[in-house]
Image 1 (cartoon, rainbow, N blue to C red):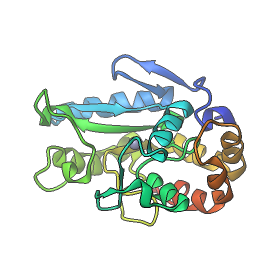
Image 2: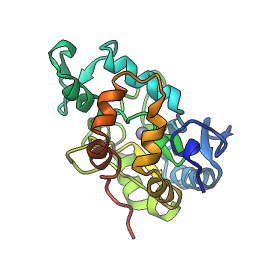
Image 3: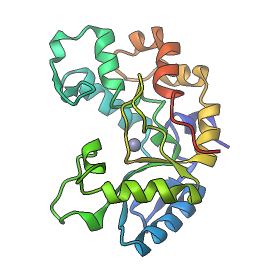
Length: 227
Ligand SMILES: [Zn+2]
């Protein structure tokens, strides 16, 4: 279904542009995403995809900006961390709770998207993609409830919902289970290690030393799709 270059975002032969959604997706995920958007529209929700397929180089750019301290690092409570005070290992964990390891982002697969409700916000509102927007009186609280009740019909689930030791809850991140399940199974430690081997990623040596632990904590430890 996916080869190792596709699994790790180093090829885009498995995805295509979807002009109707303004994003890039795997063909099968696309059909269900379009159907889900129509159903949401009938409920007064304007389901918009703000992030879809992302390649390896883009994920390396995000990683490197955080690793070098160019981009702000946050702790689990969203408080700013001081880059210079972190050990190399603490720095790696600080990145991984909010950003995926290059090669291990579910966005590489074309099966996972970040969604918002455009009908719930003013034109000039900049979505932050923080849990508070999806709860209580947040603008996307209604979307949150709608997704929970309706996305399983279209094969979607949320892999990051409960608090855990790895990735922080991301109620905006939805995943097309039938394909993403196959991708996660195929993304072995070996496939991931190979992808990291000759990348321009900062700290790749330290990451490779910890790879088995990082893999189980930040890659495979997800909330499973309903059966
Ligand atoms: Zn996401």
